[in-house]
Structures are given as C-alpha cells and as structure tokens.
Length: 276
Image (cartoon, helix red, strand yellow):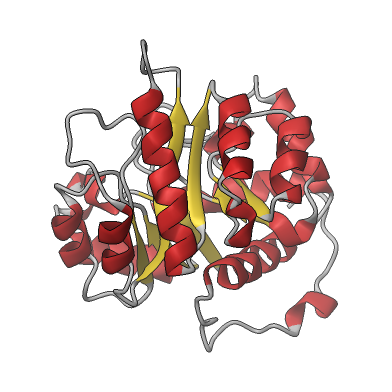
C-alpha cells in the first residue's frame, strides 16, 4: 500500500472521472494508495478544499499559505494554530521560500515562513517546506526558528546531497516527486540513493509534475506508484519494500494511525527484485 504525501486534490482535472471527485478518490484507493495528504496553498480556498475531502477519512489536510501567493490573506500564527485544531489537519504548510518565481524584496516571504514555523511549533505539528532557488535562506531560517523541534518534510526535493544532509540533521524528511523519474534529474537521483530509509517519503504534487511515463500530462495521486517503482530501482529494492518504508514513514512523521489493512510484518518476507 502507498501514500501520496503531497497532492492538491482541489486542483485536479476530474474530466477522466466524469467530474466526480468521489469516483477519483475511490479509484485511487482501489489502486493501492491508502492515504493522501491534500496540501493547502492559501486561506481563501481552504474551506472549499476542506469540504471537498470531508467524506473521505483516507485524506488528511494541511493548513498554510504558499510562498508564491502574493495577493492573498496573510495568515497569523494564532490563526494557523486555531485552524490546526481540526483533527484532519496534520501539518502546517506548504510554506517556505521560492526565489524562482518572485523578484525584488522578498522579506515578506521570509516573514511568512517564520510565521508558519512559529505556528507549527505552537501547534506541535510538522512543517511542509517548499524551497526553490532559496536553499541557503531556507536552511538559515529553519535553524534560526529552531524548526527541528517539530521537524517536517522538504517536499518535492530538487537540491543536492549537502542540502539534504543539513535538513536531515534538523529532523526533516526528504520527499521525492515525479521529477525523480526525469532523464535530467541525476542530482536528485543521487540524493535518493543516499537518504536513510527511515527519512524517505514519496509524493505526486498532483496535478503538477507527472512522472515518466505520464510526463506532460495532468498528474494524479495514483501516479505515486511510478515514483515508488523508480525509487525502488534506484535503491536496489523491491517495490513492496519502498511502499512499506514510505508508508510507515508518513504515518510516523504525521502521527496518522496506520490502516488496519497494513501488514507491518511483511517486510521480513519480501522478495528482492532489483527491476521492480
């Protein structure tokens, strides 16, 4: 069984499912994805996102404002903490820094990032970190705000091993997306081989970044299987091993109870399959 540790279900193109969100979720679950984390990017559409997933206990949510959201409601730490009291909220974010899409004085991004870290510490919930072209400031602010007290995940990781190691030392997990499967992703693939298995997560970031063989098409949570299969090949593991490891890590990080159907004893009985 798999977990998609980062997706945006409120942004999916549902036309392949006859515009039926429930059908999309049911088919995803039937295909072996046991849990999904639907990640918030702004507060204006948060209520819609939260209502959308309400009937599906297999879907958890986060609360936060993406660093690229400029014309939006700016959250306070107290507001985020209050929203995080909802038992379906298991993380704060996504938050962080993105210097690729934004220009000029970006102190507002850094201040927003600090707000989210402080909220996460107060709420006692892990962070979901977005970092693009901003690794030095991202790591600096995490250190300054003592984010290791709650930890979290660097999602859709695209940096080098030195960056990953600093994050790992600060109690963070590394999550790999469909970018891992791209032909020009050698740096990420090398990182994927080195991350300790107890800190690995996988995701789709759907509807973005569809993995090979779906690259260039809309992405869906069911495609997390392709990320798992590619990661298994890189690490010389079997697909069931990677599914087991990343599922268990998700439940450990986010304190989500493991599904009754998840067999924790099966790892010792797995058959080695390098080509999985």
